[in-house]
Amino acid sequence: MAVRAVLFDLDGTLLDSLADIGESMNFVLREMGLGQHPLTDYRHFVGDGVTVLATRALPPDRRDDATVAACVARMRLVYGGRTTLKTRPYDGIPALLEELEERGIATAVLSNKPHDLTVGLVAELLGGWSFAVVFGERSGVPRKPDPAGAVEVAGRLGLEADSVLYVGDTPTDMATARAAGMRAVGATWGFRGEAELRAAGADFIVGHPLEIVPLLLEQPAVLRT
Image (cartoon, rainbow, N blue to C red; front, side):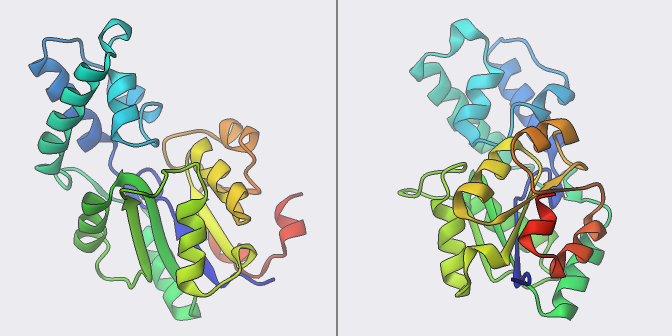
């Protein structure tokens, strides 16, 4: 079945947001009198929601529920005030989105970032393109890798899951795509590397956004070779 839609992860896939996320969390840790992390460490901290991010960033002996909750609350405030300070679309993303629009391929976003921040970032930094659905983490909907959000996106688009390419940069994204019955495309320009994405079940690996274009007419069997 030819591809009729592309569902994107946000952080590390559409947007290079590592500096704003990492610097915000380091600010919070510093306020708490705790050690900070090199920004490169945040490549392995992000992707599973703000609570998991806080848990991973905190020292092992400070991961009690109360401390995690306080860290999450403060992170939401600090990061919410600087989401676009350094964050920008990755090189090649604008050209890819133009190409998809010209071809009539629907686009959507599914992120584990809080829903309000997800919608705001897409509107501010990617507002020149029409995304049919934009979802962040929402109350009552389990976060990725649970496939519920991805399945809901396909339903909103009126499409079968196997006509959707799911593009992401973490094992969480690959697991989400496969559980939803979508074709999993691992983006190596993001926060994780090719080996990790392949091990997580990526059907295809791309090193630049425009490498997605040739996949639009590929069959599932070809993508899984």
